[in-house]
Length: 153
Image (cartoon, rainbow, N blue to C red; front, side, top):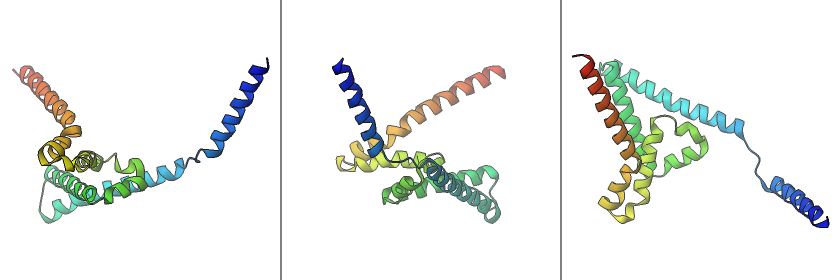
C-alpha cells in the first residue's frame, strides 16, 4: 500500500516539475505572425503579377509564372545567405504555406550537404524534396492526359 502512495506522490511531483519547466505557448502571437508574413508574401506575388501585366503586357498566366519564378529565386537566394531561416523562425508556418516554403525546402538540404561536393552533395540533395513532387506530378499528368485522350476519341 505504501508503494502505491509513493508512486502517486512521485507522479504529482513530476507533473509539477513539467508544469514549471514547460514554456508557455504563444499560439495567438504565432498565428498573427504567420498571417501577416504569409499574407505579405502572397501580396508580393500579386504585386509581381499585376506589375508584369501592366508594364510588360504579360497575360495572367505569364504574370503568374513570372511571379512564381521570382518568389522561388528570391527565396533560394535568401535561404542561401541565411536570411530566410530567420524569417522562418519568426513567422513559422507563414513562410511554409506559399510557394516559398517549397523553394526553402529544396535549397536547405542542398546547403547542408555542400561539403560532400557539387554532384553527390548539393545536386543529389536538391532532389530530396523535389524528386517525389516531380515523380507524382509527372505521373499524374500522364495519367490524366491518357484519360483525356481516350475520352476524346
